[in-house]
Image (cartoon, rainbow, N blue to C red):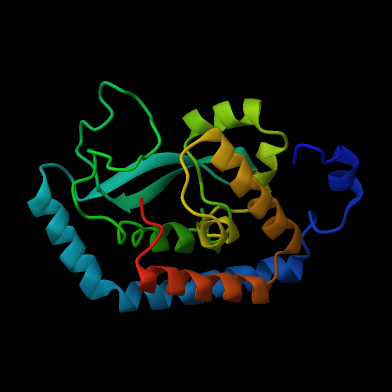
Length: 208
């Protein structure tokens, strides 16, 4: 992204999506999310109970994220941090040995199936970021807003290809994968990423 020319994006193939590709992607989103809701229902109930037992506060956590075309939406998660986690520090990236989580992690993304069914998210796409960080990253990373030309995803090419990172350098590295995905999006590519995501979950890696 450091040496990429704007003309590559304007005249290059891939950034304009065919209506059929988008329609097939939406069908896959709905089908996979419905199956996910059904299969995860027992885990959903146990996770809700675990959140309630582990700390005081609501079961769900709503947080504003930046979605397609820069529109802000409310992302749904199980609450994995104390309600006062950012009361003094403000928004910060998650870190190794972070003291804020309550203990319910890895499965906190399950409620985002409802974001997908509601059309705010896709199953596969760039992970949605908080506006606080987006405003910063737009200033520091060339072409960063291009990741908002598609719906954000529950998982993505960057998530299955690059280890978790919490810095501007990591955000720039993940942008490379996000732009590659956007330029080459297809139904088969989405299925490939979904299968890779299942493998990551089974290995128990990548959560923070």
